[in-house]
Length: 309
Picture 1 (cartoon, one colour):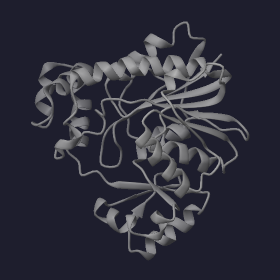
Picture 2: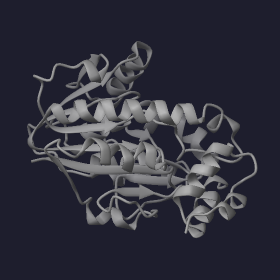
Picture 3: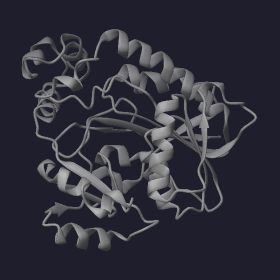
Picture 4: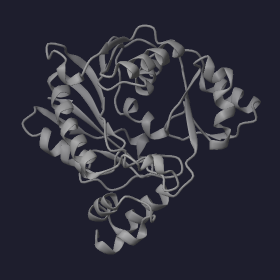
C-alpha cells in the first residue's frame, strides 16, 4: 500500500514533490522498482526504418560494427545496446543514411497500440522530433496519409530534417498548435504523445533530467493534456482510434486526465495488444492502459488506446 514510509526508498537527490507523488500512488514494492529504475544506467535503443532496411540488415550492420545487441520479443524492429556504443552507432552509415532511428523503447509503444489500414488518415498531434511519425510511416510502408503537427518552428524544422533523412517524403507537416486545428479535419488514427513533466525519464545520476521538474510543471502539463485530448477526440472519426501517451508515471498526467475527459465524449478505452504485456509494468487504475515501469531498458511511460463509438 502507498504510505509515507516509502519516501526513504527513493534516491536522495530526487525532487521532494516527485517522491511524495510516487509515495501517494504506489505500493512499497512498486516504489522500490521505480527507485531502481531511476538509479539504473539506462541502455540505448534503436529501431529499423523499414522504408530502407529490414531488421536482418540492421542486425548484420550492428554485428559488423562490433555492437552487441538484444531484441525485445514484442517488437522485432527494435534493438537494445549498451550506452557506450551509442557514439559508434551515431557515426555509422546506418544512422546518417536514416536506415535506423535512435529512440527509447518506451517511445516506440504508441504506434504499436493500434493498426493502420492502408490509406487511413493519421494525425500526430505533437510530432517533433519525429520518432513516432517516422515509425508510423515505417510500419505502414508509407501507405497511410500522415499529418504531423508541431507548434514550435525550430522543433518543426528538426521534424522535417528527420522525416527527410528517414525517407518519409509524403508526410504533411503543419506548424500549428494542435488545439487550434479546425475540427472539420477528421482522422482514422490519432497519436497524442502529450507534453508532460517527464517523471518517467528521471535518472538519479543525471541532474538534467530533474532540473525542470516541479509541481507547477505537472499541473500545467495536466491542463494542457486535457485540452489536447478533447481536441483530438473532436477530430477522430467514428470507429477511429486515438492513442494517448506520456513519458510520465504520475496519475495527474495519465489516469486522471482520461477519467476527466472521457465521460460524455462518445469514446471508450480499449485493451492494448497482448504482445505488449511482456513489458515491465506498474499497476494502473485504468486496466486498459499500459503503465511502463522505468528501468534499464525502458523509460517510465503511459499509453492508452481510445476508440470513438
